[in-house]
Image (cartoon, rainbow, N blue to C red; front, side):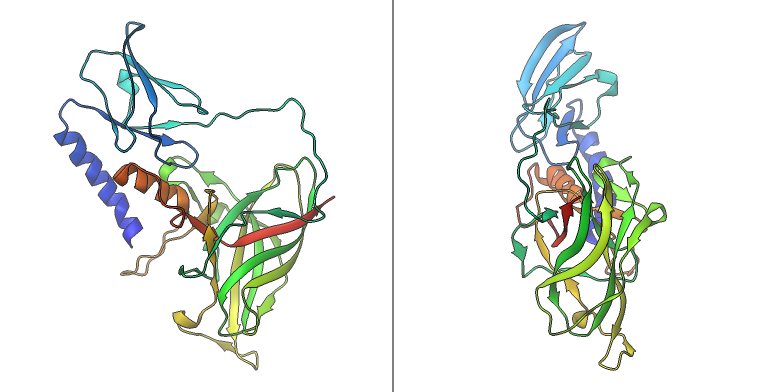
Length: 314
């Protein structure tokens, strides 16, 4: 699969780039949370605590440091925390963290009767969509950012097509996110613990577009869960299990996304082998665009399954 192969290509490209660039060190500034390319980052070079150079990184390429003596460097950008390195600890990729502004007092005004978690962006009708799987294959990490409990009542999601009656269920997982390699942030299914499993539901071929699946779960303040829609079986009119070809299997629609909370396994189209972990898809894409093209991907490239949690304040 292309994205798995990119891991090898990425390492090879780094090796070749470093070997041909001589003494010029190139730095790629990225957003720590999203792995997006950061243009126009301020930097200052120091030698024995005295500033010897200052500048701004380019808009559409990596920063090439000047060939002058220095022993430390600092990076800064509006709305990001400044960061400094000694020359010996400086790497080819640096991550800047967005500033978090804390309010002294939070006032919660009038809330709608129903509260929706997750994005509600433009649906992408021509995108491929996500097949339902009999395992934890993809999921959205959503959290309760309100200062009160949320009684989750339903999962609203969008299907691309339903050819055969489809038995499925909704699962909420507690997960541990591995950020050891930020651009390959992932979740291991072995560390995903189900905290809620819905009763089995059935999609009928007559149903179209929006699906509302009832759930019953209380999400506490600050709690994060991975929301997964998983296949149980395809059946015929007599409830006999059937095994439809891929082109007749049920798909979840994609929507445009501004977030990096979509995790999925990848499958090699040649070997048909799956990755063991679920990778953060949009962090991966952001990083690849930053590394290869020094820019952010287009809006339609960053996508996520069109899935929302709907509940009410307790």
